[in-house]
Image 1: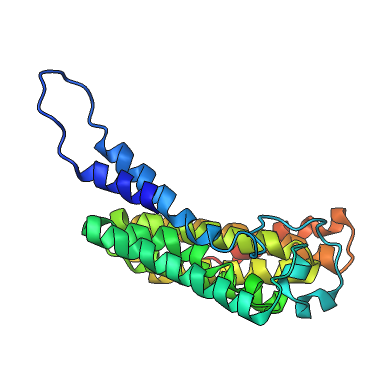
Image 2 (image 1 turned 90 degrees about the vertical axis):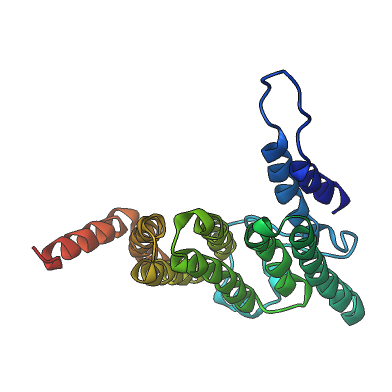
Amino acid sequence: MLSGATAVALGLTPAPATGRTAGDARPAFTLFGLLLLPTAPLLVGRGHGPGLPLLPGVPWSAPVSVLWEPAYSALGLFRVEGLAAASATAAGTLLAGAVVVALVGLLDRRRVSAAVALTAPPALVPLPLVLDVPFLGALVWTLAVGSALVLWSALARDWRPGWLPGLTGLLTLLLGSGWALVQEYAYAGVLMAVAVVGAVAAALARNGLAAVGATAVATLSTGAFALVLPLSLGAPVEYAALAPIAMVAGVAVAAPR
């Protein structure tokens, strides 16, 4: 936190008046600080926390019952021993995220929204892994965090303050999709959920960038769902590949002219 706050503070320090025409390094300091500060929640309880994996060990290898197992077990992580240690780690993660946002607010109020967008995923997504929440609950929680950020981006009237929440929200949804790879039905359900979020965001979008990005996400997720669902039901690959083609043809036929 100290290193990140120092970098943000250096980004606000007036450049010395010299006769040279060197470029201004202050934006680089600000960017470095804003990217460094959100790592603080991930470092809370490193000796006790299970970590934040990007992908499961073996995709499509778990039975449906894995959805009711603890999230740390489904993702191949170790358990936080004891209720007190788990609660302390979860509280420390939330506190670290709040302190990061408060530090940025004290140093540079213009960057508070960027700090919230960058800090929310690392501060909120690990909580189910620490608190022994079932894997299904962890997936729903991760998708909820990503969806909130995406909708925040869509409701922004200007794309400039809205692009960063949209990006972090999309990365959070991708993280949840990566976790769902452990079970084929869960993966199909997550793809459908991402498609719905993209469609809702596109319908509510108040700026062009969010509308285009959300439409692209909804389209890609729907196509992926149309391919994954037959595969999860045991259909051969050559037949499953026809499902996205049929979906596109159906949309083309039903589209108004």
